[in-house]
Image 1 (cartoon, rainbow, N blue to C red):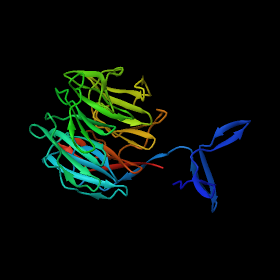
Image 2 (spheres, one colour; image 1 turned 45 degrees about the vertical axis):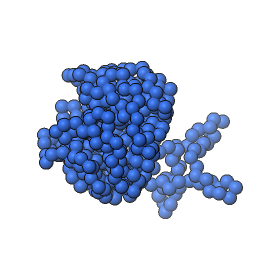
Image 3 (cartoon, rainbow, N blue to C red; image 1 turned 90 degrees about the vertical axis):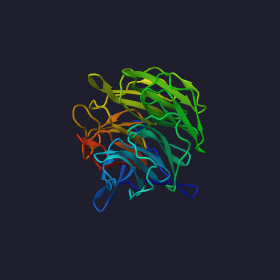
Image 4 (cartoon, helix red, strand yellow; image 1 turned 30 degrees about the vertical axis):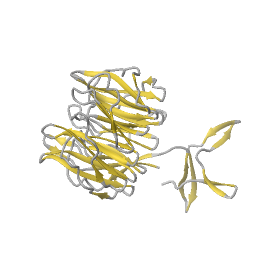
Length: 365
């Protein structure tokens, strides 16, 4: 793995981020640099981050799907879920060395909670366990659990962060949005413009809630700024439910989904001005994928399209799509989060009443 190339500036070693060489009186960007060591070429410089499949980390302490994931401090947390034994309250934490620990469990068992980070906390909110839940649990950077004020309405929302807030919006039949600030105080922004189960992503000064299920597939996008003011960007190019969302560079991506009776591979991208564009579609249409951002990449992994998928699509800051190594096990209803230079894809459903504890890791360097 590349260790880096440095140049001395006023007696201080500065890491080289970009390098150019003159070719025909034109400056050409150096993409990679090598040094001969014992007759072998060793990579010492890369003009951009390289994404690779690391392998699998220690498995989850309990196999399950329908879980949620968020990051705080030096940890990626995976909480709640469902397995053949019923709903779960288990939380697994992975640090930057990919060592697993098991913090105090959620205060209530539930599947399909939503998770987001704000300030020094990762929050797990809502979900379902026989009936909808309004419980919110917060974990700080030391993995100590607390229980902030519950959601204003029990449901399984979508979640994203913006500025000093974590937002939990929508849910089946709901347009409610609850916002938690860095002190874990709850407030009530303007509801979504349409009640639905949406996908959500954070983008600079905005949190976006896009698409979803509102009795039928939706194309609506709601954006909340750092003052929690709601606006209405251009709708998705195609209405769909059960899509996934992640951010990379200055863009938020909404990918895949389902529009009865077809699975979708469509990807819509919104930039920091909330202008919509159309990157290359996913390499395989699917719903119920998981998404995470790491370094200069947004990754969409797994999902379902008549069968379980192991496909992973990666988009860089130029919105160019690449195809990393597939997940080690095909699955849907998994969760993804990042810690350090790694994105982790954990758990999921692998068959009827069959669930996974596998954690696949992708790293950038």
